[in-house]
Length: 174
Image 1 (cartoon, one colour):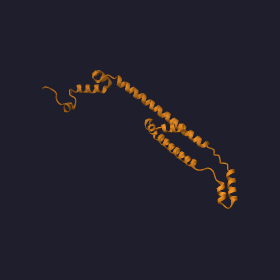
Image 2: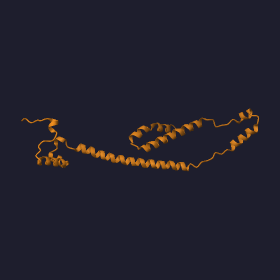
Image 3: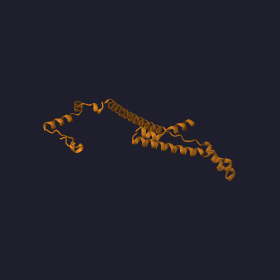
Image 4: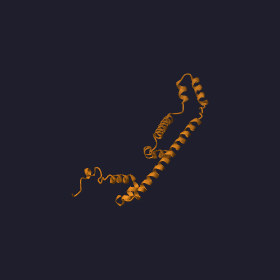
């Protein structure tokens, strides 16, 4: 029982919700499950705290009609609790578990894809040459639109970039 309490205390659900990136439906289902579980534990604790024995000698001494007490004692002795088929509940739990596992695997696959993309981006950033080392040809190959714009400007005889003087001022000595 102590190990059960230790494992329950070790689970940090808020951290699980935030770090795993679970969907809204999954988080809502987990919270509903936790609420039902805590309610069941509370009710079980209340029922276990109640006394389970009946003092028939006290009732025989307090009541005048002792046959009622004898009849109640016989009914209690002959009482057999009704057994319920919990197969439907177990099946529902297994279905929920299957859905949760499938959703978790789907989330894991999405996270793996994102991690691979991020690793590729990180390696591209680390392997990239500094901006100062790039040549005009390499920039033109990377972005052909820049070359087209420059060629159009040269054909039209425009040797200045629009907005350059307004932003940086006129640096000519003449």
